[in-house]
Amino acid sequence: MASVTDALNSKPPLGAALAQGVKVLSADQHIHFNLYQRYVFPLDGMIYWIKVPSGAGAINTPGTQAIAGMASQTDDGGAAIQVAPGSFWGTNRVVGGVIVNPLSAADQGLATAEPLYYDFTGPAYSYETGTTSVLQPGDSVEIPENNPNGAWVCSPSDNHKFTCVVYISLPSVTLPTDVDVQGSFHYASVSLQREDATVDSNDIIFTSLSEIQEFNIIGPNNLYIGTYNGVQFAFSQRGRLYEQADLYHYQGTAVRTTHGTQIIDDPSQFNPTLTVSNSLPIWLSLSSYVPPYPTFNCPFPLYPSYLVDDNLAPPFGSVHIENTKALAMVPYMGPKSETGYLCLDKVKIHLYGLDAQEVSDFMLCVENYSRDWMTLGLANSPAIYDEKQEQSEMKIISQYKTIEFEVNYLQTVARNIARQFILHAKVQFYDPKWFTDKPEVTPHATEQRSSSLAG
Image 1 (tube, rainbow, N blue to C red):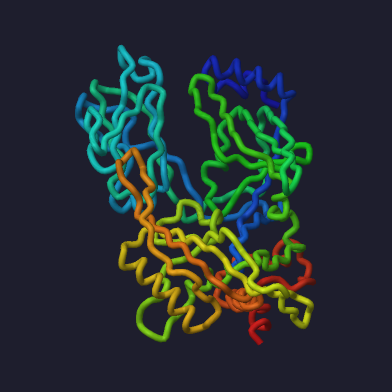
Image 2: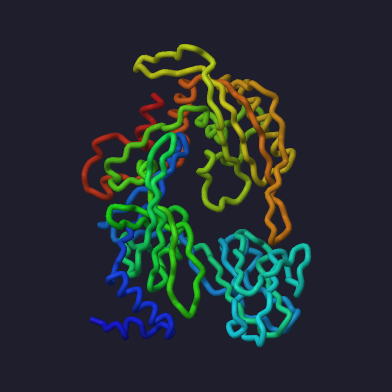
């Protein structure tokens, strides 16, 4: 077995000493991570994370890769240099990145530490402008994805050193189902006594002796979830790296008990059902609504609020239902004792990437859908609001609009639409036989079952 010296010989002197201290304090601790895949239930947009069994060994899936930027130091002072690609690469392959201006003058390769200027719209200047912004020593900035102009930097002095990392999308990466990482696990537990539930919130910090490469290449539809003493957790961010220390700090929050229903460890026992009780299924079905006239349809996807896909490129919309009220004193009782009220919802639609005419067409789509199918009644006169959502690095605002509706509907109609909606949905679901070699006992939300529902 390799000695401690052999294991640490690739680290800088400070990093080797700190790594040895971490090993001693953590008692040579290892944390185990399992690979999960995301499943979106098409009826109501609820997200579940389903464990990929260890027997699979590894899976091939679209992912990302971190690569060095196009440059790591400037040339002549006052002359811009490109550090991240634009054009085809910027809009099709680059899914983000980061630019870091080192804190010390030595790391910048200069006699005195100085600021670094950057621009995401074109060549940067050596001073602040409407599009060129400044990074003070020790600061960093994220490179936006889908940026056709790339990223540029400029410095007042010659040969200013900096760090630039670019994340690119890959059509296929290999992800192991199980990962063991050596490091030190820290958590702080706080008990939250709320009106609706009493839960423990565990804030996690994991100090790893090396960069977890699997976390760098994973795509948005996969997630590594760790387990420690029965606590499940995932990481939402990584702390700033001090290169001389060569330690990596990952931060996140443990899965709360109220959210445990969304983590599925046994795919063969997973049988999702409709969760929401409001008009959301009606709104989600609008994307597949084809009117009998040539226009006024909904040519972009709609998502439930808080469940929009990661870093989704416009156009798209999200549906936020703020309030549900019953309009009748006694509910309708169905043949299987299911109840259905006549209800009123307050609905806020968030729309990105649409101009005034396209949003107006969407409003006409909703009105025509209401008249054609009479499943959704409009109870107000909605107006289009222009919202302001800025990005200070480029001095721009997004194409962001909202519409507020008040609608009435029957809950039984919303459930019926949900059952029909699954016929047209793209189902991402595991076949239990693929994992367990056992026949399926309980029917799942598959296309075969959908056909029987239609009948």
